[in-house]
Length: 256
Ligand code: HXC
Image (cartoon, rainbow, N blue to C red; front, side, top):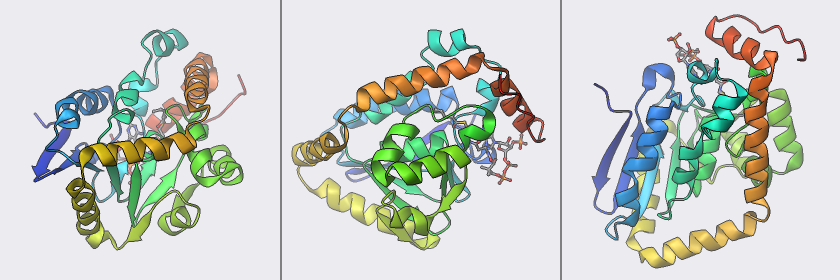
């Protein structure tokens, strides 16, 4: 059976590859539980100085798995605290770089933003298209994207559901560097090796300090956002939006 994630270590750098390319790396519970669990010992390992998270050429990740979520009710989402595993990924203390090639949409964009740095291939496309499914960002998009790119651009992305390309993403501060697709891993690994070459206590402390600059109110914002996301599973529009995606047709929203 295919592993949901592939983990390779090169000296002090750990490369994690999301491994559902045929589903555009849609992030199902299996992938997120693997990410949350398998990285725990590596995060604590003093011999590991940097994580690099990547997807496939076509898709870093096309979001949370719509097929897994489509039939869930409010009580399923709220009762299971659906997405709790994602918090564990966000809380790893080892510096993490997202190497984004192709689509980083919805939860895929949110997963990239949980990393400390995003490097983008010139093929990268970012977006928070949840609105098209009758829901909204549920794992940090409304909070982290707004802090990174400002209110106006975040509202544009979240309310229209449009994508932005790598150039726009660099211009507005979502990504640190844009590089040609065939150089993405070379450039990302060079930066990862540099980071991993420093003292781990210092890099962990530095990233925590930078995060403090952004995190005022983030905890409350994230919880607020997640509860709203869960509650949208009580609407008919969520069922219609997700079913329409699976059936490959346009949704007919009724505002209820
Ligand atoms: C489940 C998905 C998926 C997803 C793609 N697939 N994205 N399955 N969940 N998020 C599946 C398709 O159903 C299809 O399955 C296969 O992957 C290939 O997808 P295509 O659409 O044929 O590929 P392509 O034409 O290249 O288009 C790629 C795409 C498109 C632009 C990324 O797939 C797309 O728009 N996906 C949905 C993006 C999205 O809405 N993301 C937000 C999800 S909600 P079959 O079986 O037909 O081969 C979300 C909420 C976050 O993330 C909340 C907190 C985590």
